Image (cartoon, rainbow, N blue to C red; front, side):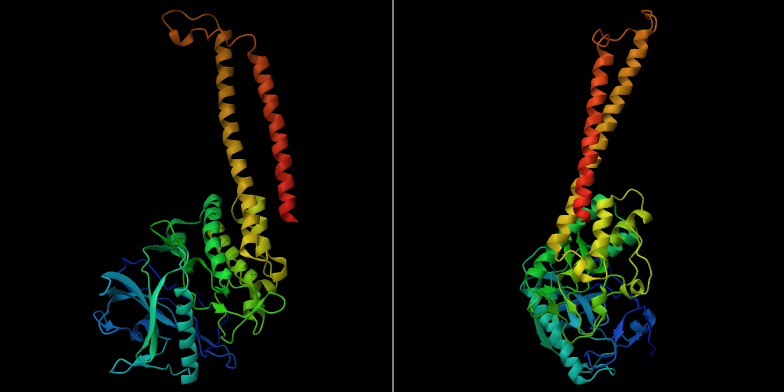
Length: 427
């Protein structure tokens, strides 16, 4: 075991439902669950994870045969997620089992506490797992993964969830490449609405990233893995404080206050993670970690990494990624309003340029017709050189002169409007 500074991101709790194989990654593993213990991270290779994975075998049953395990869906450091058959309702579901790395099963199926944890720490973490399930079960929102039920058995806990079909944004990013600006802005609104619903329920997600956002085949975007979420008391200043669990989130997406024990967090912390996620989708590159940035590593503006990104969108993302939480948009709604101002400007600019290009082609065609009209009359054997219609004669230059003047005035007005909107967003 050794200390490391940049652990690999943990795998999301869902993957493609049609995958027959197990996806194993390098995981971030906390040596202790409680804040009085030092935070130690160890690296586990895929082969080591596979050799030490004491998962339920296909065909195993839970709840007196009501759930039949079909296959493993995903593995994280704190849980194993299975595909199972709900024999009562005759449907497939996802079953998430609390199973910290290093846990073992006895011959009777009881889960044994990992050697790096005490029974008290194990029980505390299991209680938080159940609290996560209890919180998610309260939601009936298309953007939050649905929890059907949860229960305790075999010295551990289980969460029965809806089985999602599709892929995470991380998987789409890796297979299809980065998203364009219009796509990212559309995704931002879907994710933001779901995240605002989480905040309205008095919760923080605290681990928002492309791995934890699932793009369903039916068009939904669903937030996953609320393992770091916390229900926190509101103090006199309207902020929420960290609980006793030392879990920092994912480097690159976690704000700096999430690395500090006892720091104050609020909705602006999740706004940072949302902005980091959108930055990654837009540029194809994750932002530097907050700790690296605190030591001087620069955060490149999106327009320097990808040409053509509008200044309003880039500025809004950079503002939401400021290290000082007080300088970010104070909540998701504020962030989306600023981002949607950029969306409107981008849509207006795109529409304007499209119309301008179409008018330009029409003008070029009219000029070509004028040129043909000035040539000698064509012979009857060559109808392609016949004179243009009579209306394209004397008044044509005057008409197009007025037409061009109109569009020049329109361009000046639009540029002035863009400038006003940009500075209103900036300040």
